[in-house]
Amino acid sequence: MMHTKFGQLIARTVLALALVSAQDVHGVRAGQTWTMASAYPADTVSGRAVASFAAALSRRTGGALKGATEFGFSGVEADLVEAVQDGSVQVAGVYSGSLTHLDPIFELPTLPFEVHSVDEARRLACLAEPAYRRALSRAGLHLLFISPWPPTGLWSRQPVMTVADIATLRIRTYDAASAEVLRALGAHAVVLPVRDVEPLLHIGGLDAVLSSGDGAVGRSLQADLSNFNAIHYAFPVSFVVVSQSRYEALPKKHRSQLDEAAADAEREQWTSLPARIRANYAQMQQAGVVVNTSIDAGLSVRLRKAGEARVEKWLSRAPPEEAGIMKAFLNQGAPVAQDRCPLNMLDASHGTRG
Image 1 (cartoon, one colour):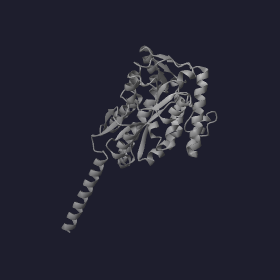
Image 2 (cartoon, helix red, strand yellow):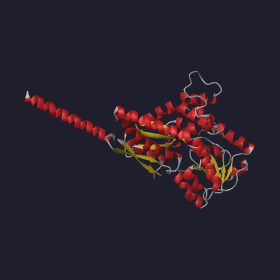
Image 3 (spheres, one colour):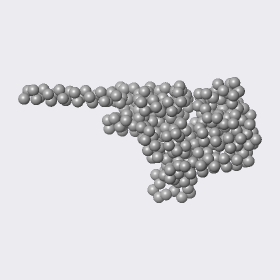
Image 4 (tube, one colour):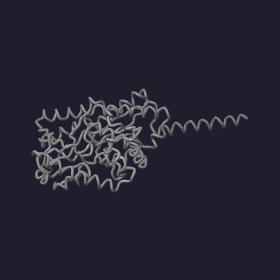
């Protein structure tokens, strides 16, 4: 009898140690610190999203889970995704355009000239969120929240007033789709990560940059590019993710707290975006950058035609359910009954049409 009880005690002890070890592997010990990384500087919307989530997580868990933030990740964003998958980084903010090799859905936020306001950007993100979650899950990632960027504009050394002004430019773009659109207008467009842009500008290797120019990134461009053309190419997004296995291994209480922290951070990002756009423009002008918000009609028509061709190409190769998201978004005049993504997702006071 005594041997039986002793054996049961040993078994329970081994099981308890195994459970503790499993929790340690997935970072749920009290006071555990997770590495949370972004490829962008701290003073960008992507950097702020990671920092906001780290603060919200510590607050929601009472310090049981904390985030150690890292900005300006040295590798390409594909490396950052791998770092989350292999556990060397626990949470990361990843730009949607860096994930297009995983699924066509990740090109959706950067389809050109279809989104014209923060409100519309938030509606599209809402409509597409279930598809984003499924695609990320297939890659072993769990979507914590969607983090929006300000609208993309064209930075240039000289004013860009006509199609001819674009045709001679060497332009940095952020994904293959935007490079294709600008090449259709005759530009010499190349895809480059943000960290490679400033050195090339300094040696005259680039004439223009397609970028929102948010925060620290914008300040890094101002010394070489004194014009910002607010073409509102797209309203991109980043995804703040954790590995699916790490998320699922969390106790229910921690998962709930993680979800609440993610909701806090996402709400803060969307709510603050209109003011962020205004602050960026004000800072540009204060630094002597000419902000052109009135685009020449002829140039606008050519840009939109090139953009429409790109959208049609995407629609033709995207799975029907993914193509249907864009079609539902474009059919804004007639939202379906019980639409969970209403047209006005932000208060009217926050609206910023372009």
